[in-house]
Length: 253
Image 1 (tube, rainbow, N blue to C red):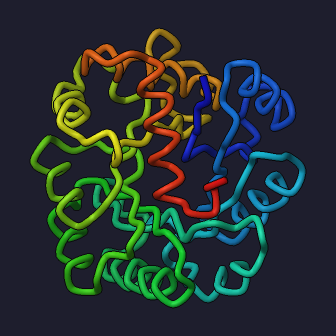
Image 2: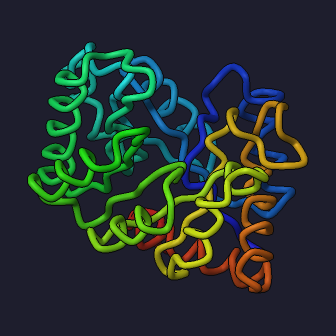
C-alpha cells in the first residue's frame, strides 16, 4: 500500500526521533509522501529545509491565524522554492484568538489572493469559525484546490466544503470516541475528495492518543476510516493518495 500524509510538521522538534527517523518509520509503514506545513516565517523556512533533505517530502508556506499579527509580508518571498507546493496553513481560529479577529480575517484574505495569483492550493485551518470561513471563501473565490485540514466539523460542514470544491482532510481526531460528527463526515465524503493526515506531532490517533504523533500513523487514521465506511484499507490508501495528487497537483507522477 502507498499512503500520503498530506499534513504534518516534520520540522517540529517534538517529532519522535527527528525528521530522519520519522521519514524512515513512515517509509517502513508504506507512507511514501509527506507534506510538512509552515505556520509562520520561521516554520516555513524549517519546512523547506526538511523537504530539501528527503525525497517524497514537500513543504508549504503559510501564516497560521495564531500568527496573523506577523503579517503576510513575512512569508511572501518564499513561494518560489521548487519544493513549496501550497499556501497555508491559514484561516481563522476563534477558539484561542491569539491574533485579533480582524487581523486573522485580513491575513486569510491575503493568502487566498496569494493562492489565486500563484496558482497554488490553499490549506485552511478553521476552528469555531465555520460560517465566517465559508463566507470569506465565497466572497473571495475558493482556489481550485482548497484543502480543509484537520476537519473538525459535522456532515453539514463537510457538504459545504465539498460544495466549494474543497477536499476534506481527516486527522487522528476521527478515531476519538467522542468525534461522532467527524466520523459521520468521513462516511459521507466522496473518496475523490477525502484526504488523510496526521498533523503530527499533534493529535495521535487511538490507541496512541497522548503520545507524540508521526507520519507513519497516518495508516492508523486511514485504517479507521476504512472500517467506518466498510471499505478495504487498500481502497482508502489508494483513493486518499489519488485525491492528494488532485489536491496538490505537484505530487502527481
